[in-house]
Length: 236
Length: 226
Picture (cartoon, each protein chain N blue to C red):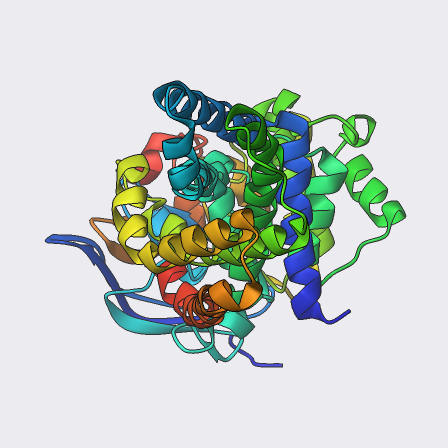
């Protein structure tokens, strides 16, 4: 196994004249969880979308598990899951069908028992046969989490993973992230809520005007005066 | 079954299940086509001979514009909850996604054509041809051509705000050979002409289908990446 799970070298992204990311360098080893902080428009989602092969960087290059992000995209895609703002759920399929379809595209064929276990774990097992059109935002997020659990990726790319989740859902999400880290998985998580991320974070960084600056974990999640850090403090 | 075929089957399954549940695409296609057929029917009600002369053209005008509605919805439906992103991140070749979508689009268009053809038969007093299978071959080949090119352009225009306008503008010039060949072959089949008279049009349709399916298969990677 490669000792480097994710490596970004001088990564940059521009939309026309607007430079969203500038000279981003980041190296993560297996078992690390990097929490990405920054204000709206800082480039967090753009960075995650580049790593998820949804966008191409304007400059620099990146590797994941030793595979080049530009040239080995097809091979790379079977090793990560991007849990995005949107849930990637089809409203006219039920939960079971959504999972079966998504995993089939990854070449996986979960049994009914596997699907039931995953849905039960995120506490929506009772709604497995209901069209997801009738799900709340939090239930859709849980379904996306169940899909991620069944996929068992080596790399997790999470964009605001706690949004729309209640305290129970947040705990399930955190437990799962911890489980992946214990299993030598690697996580990059963009969030506005460092407190929620703290228990699983091993390193953190702040994106500001497209530049990534690594910050000490303590300063990220807890202020020196002992007061719990508020979400906006992270952006100051 | 190979992973390649499995992926195509899953995409087809997903599109068919969703369509069976919400019936948005086929319902709007049939409704639009019925309006077109009725307008043609009233326009030619006084002159049955003129109607018979241009019947094949009317059939394909109705089928092509109806197909455009289905093609337009093919990828715009994937924008819900950003499902298109999930397809883009799927660890499968883009070509299999393309073929899955082509299969689904072909199925929708062909079903609508089969539903609509009897309307033409009734409203234009067409003698039902002896060998319907030849007509089905014409419909299949021409619909496959429309689906092959249309699926590529539907993916190309999915992120454009005016995609409903752009899709026909881009697609119709590309499928002119299909339309001409389909009209000529349909005319031959409806008239009960010997196959040898319109075989070249069928061959043209088959060649178009093969060439554009292969080209689109390879180009789909760039289109999905764009």
